[in-house]
Image 1 (cartoon, rainbow, N blue to C red):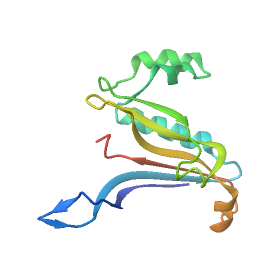
Image 2: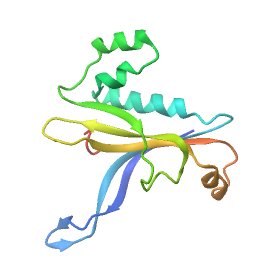
Image 3: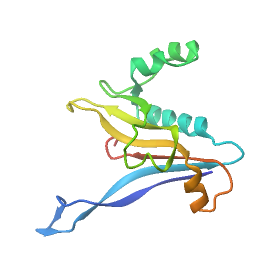
Length: 154
């Protein structure tokens, strides 16, 4: 198990500091990896839900409705959430730049809806790593990974 919150330097042609183009900016992200006898996909899914709860972002009604546990859906009325802030988790679309690193059909994207923004914001992804990725990094066990951009939540 590995978990980290840190700044990541990403390319950014629009970021300007004192009239000089730097071409990069820092973005705060959280990442986690679970490797073991099982893939741990459900563990990282739970971590994503927990992070969203701690940042007071509630799940969309449609996401709650797909929950297998009726009691969990009933608990949602007691969740503390910021008004208008909601998230959902969808299957990762094929053809995205991350889709090759995940096992086909075993990856998801995290989408945020927040006030003042018309379209959903893609916060990150999580899923089970593809066997080729495991082989390239000499990882002996199935592994799941998760990465979320915290900038939109802070």
